[in-house]
Image (cartoon, rainbow, N blue to C red; front, side, top):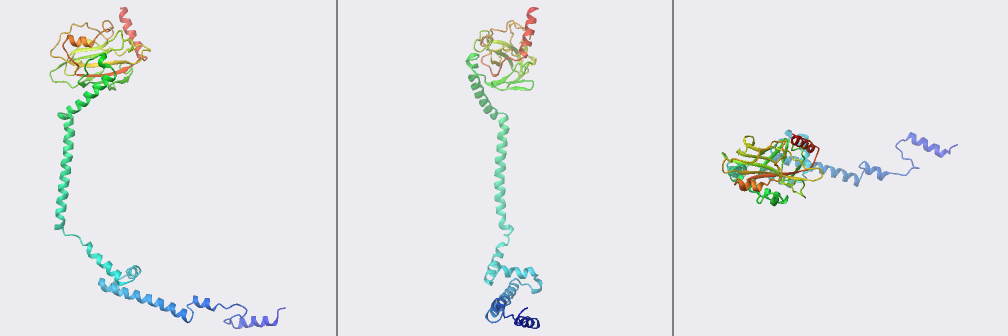
Length: 339
């Protein structure tokens, strides 16, 4: 059973819903603060809000007067954005002062700048033409001479590094001879195989019109570089070549591919081009590709001196050692000797 006082208080709470329960602590200050309340708090809240709204309205009117627009022409975004960004008319005046600086410069004032750009562009084009002309000249004339000097220095250094000078020559060739075996191009001192070089190569060089040349290919390392008692071995010899058309020359010794003996290491194979002063009648023995007789113990120095050829005008060389192609060549040479 509940006490009578409790029952009467519950009955009064139901009959008077707005009456505050005396058993619960009062929250007048808190609820009054939240709702705006009465007295000092309520007065401060409303006054502050009204002041902000009046400032916004004054700023909107001020902006409309400055921009020369009617209130009806401003949408919601234009009305609220300036008020959010600017809080005083002085800031808006600063923003308005910046606008005239964006006025474009008259075309007459910009014209000299265009002319200056054209002049600069013209200078660049002239420099570009000069560079192109320089590249074109490099293919012939003075450029060719410069490249020739570079090739000449490289040929000299490579021939000396490989001891082709003095083993074979006293002086290096003036130019590099271009040598190509099928799809294999020979660079100075490149290592190839007898299989790579089994077919006669194509040889070209800077030839003069109407000039005759002699082409020679030799191995100074026969039977080995450490013991060259059979060197130089003549692999190819062609004279009276018009220009650099080797096929139209007078074949003295047909081409035999490199045949280094097994276990003798790398052999040097030197290709030289000499310029003739006239058409020559060579009294050298003629040799077919399967004939080895007369190819050993041959000296290119003595040959050049005999026919007054002087120093070679072009040259190249490569290195090669034994592979499976060599026995096939020896079989051909042995068969020929038996006959």
